Image (cartoon, rainbow, N blue to C red; front, side, top):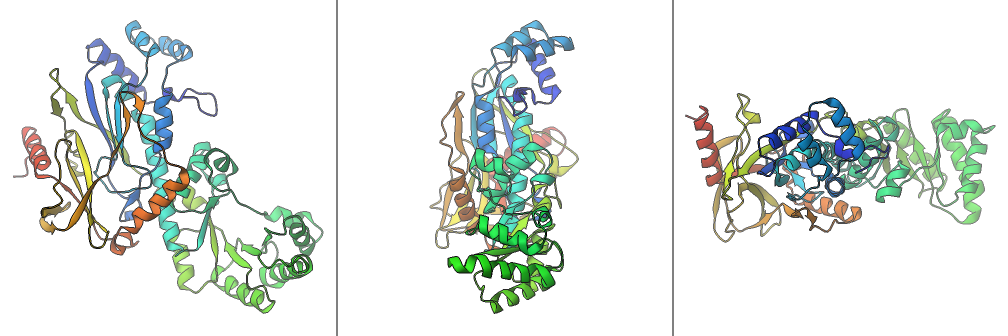
Length: 486
């Protein structure tokens, strides 16, 4: 896979993935089938859920995996790798299986979002890029969803390209923000590549370029009469900006019969200024003129502006969204959970730690979501071994993930497997949905979460339980390593 800079992204891997691969080959383990889970440990901003994103870019990466002769020459120069390993890399391609939760789905800590089954070297080489895309896009989609929910139905646009952390931060960040609920982006290339609607009107420099603010507004209205959104805070919002905007609308748009237009504010006391702006616009007869605000907004500030009665139709949210400034690390990990024996049996593996949060769930697994048949709402997730099935015609007792004495009985529920097959024997078997459909899917799935799970402060702890078989397996493996619960 080539990046926009011409770099082969197969080489965007941690160096230890190559040293381990070399060692696997030396030990004759290159064909040993392994199982890895991608999951995350904690929800950003202490929220109630996160949003899965980044799968489309992972699919593209896996399809284009290769090692070039230039890469081989570089590795030869490091004088660490056996000739047999370099020859293996010359013919490298992915031949394994991948299952994944579709993009846009709400996800919770500890549950397998992506599962990889592949020969050891292949599976190991996927780790860095897979985590990079999953962590970044899931982080931004999650933050965007919070921001959009705070806006209570008002339009939110992603304005963060110039503050993003690198090219991918801006480009795929805009894609992830759209999945999370943003209506569009200021990033043109994200529109060109992914179809994220690009929007924008003017900067302060446009207003400064003309002899007067009024002249700048008149010129813009004449050039874009059906998209006249004027930036009114270059000099003085209430004394000149809004009056000059009204004057320009009257002189240019009114004779054309155009009543739809807008103003944007990028500074000042947004609650007060938008209230005054709405009053001035309405008194002048421009009741359909929309008010957009920007300037270092996030979900907390948006919610507070709305609480204060600000008259805002849409928000442009930049740096605090595209960098997820309040909690900028998603924390997804890629952990070995099983290997296959020579007879095809699945041998579970576990990582044990004194830090309880870092203990992994062993085995080849899948995850169900339980929906109440009467309300359609999501009630709990259930992680079990891959060969287990859930009979959703019978009551099922589940436990709180943080307090196993806290239990509830699931009745009248519908069990839905969250992961879908993506690759089988190295071939893509999943039809990638359009970005617009992913965004719609995300909005619907979030709507199935109870409001208590979605609140910003002290959200309800959503149930994610392990099946009795999986819990028994985990407990027995912990006991083997001297970490029994007793």
